[in-house]
Image 1 (cartoon, rainbow, N blue to C red):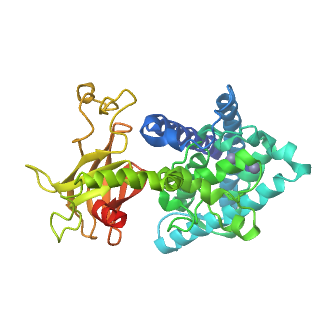
Image 2: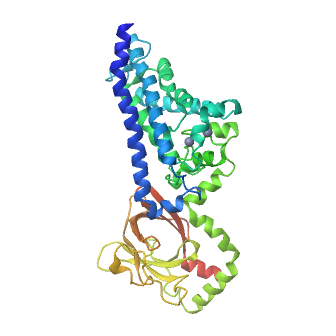
Length: 420
Ligand SMILES: [Zn+2]
Ligand SMILES: [Zn+2]
């Protein structure tokens, strides 16, 4: 007995340091990303209009550090279980290969999602809510620091998962480590307060079975719906997914599509203006520069904000794109719009019309194009990928790290002929 206590006490400091460090590193990382990319696009992805309450962050951090402490008290039991042979944490690949490691990790995540979903739903029962779960929901507008912001009883429920799982499934030490990393990263992403997932995580898209920041943020905002941790499966199956989830996610990651809808109402006005542009012979030069590259010519950006001409760059290889027309070509004082958001103050006086915003586009093996796109609205340069989408559409995606914006541009000549 004394020996087991020794094992427990010698394991505990390491477990505690790892649980605490994991939380602090992940939450700091997320908070830093939010700060760095706030102006570059995350501000537009803020999920709730209200801000976190004053003092909220401090409360979240203190509660999370307490949770890490409770996790470590439960986690150190694993060392005792390992010594006694109740559980198996193995090293090397003698007994089981990398495939087992991958499968057991996947199983652990699916099992944790299931455990979390049902425990979480139970804690929303009115008899249990105050004791277990009220602390976590004090953060109506969560921040990454809320990742472990639990009351003590809730922390015990969550901390019990890993020892319980290990009683059933032997795990490689690396699998266990990977689980800890995925768990905290998904957790801080869910509490980021601004959507940090790309459009590929939208419902119906290839990663759409995963939860997103919008998904868990809606849980905090509404106080119900969306109980899952990593995946949407249980919420879909049990009918507890927020009815507005899909619409809200899409509106936040592709604001262009949402904004394009009201524009439809003014189609006649658009048509009238486009007509006058046509009469001015604006599209005389429209049409592919090279029949085979398929990108050359004039393109209308999403929401008819601008027309960009794609043509071979002068002096450098690849294609370049230049703004040829703007919906809002002048400001309310009648002055031409300038590149006012540019990070380089010396460039802020250059007019937007005639500005080269796409540069160095080169073909990719997959049939698309890649290069750089400058967005005058935020003064940022994005990595851009372009691909033809049918006869008259160009699909553009611009990314800074993992923050991506998608747009569909339309061939100006196709629009011109549609207007006749
Ligand atoms: Zn909840
Ligand atoms: Zn939460």
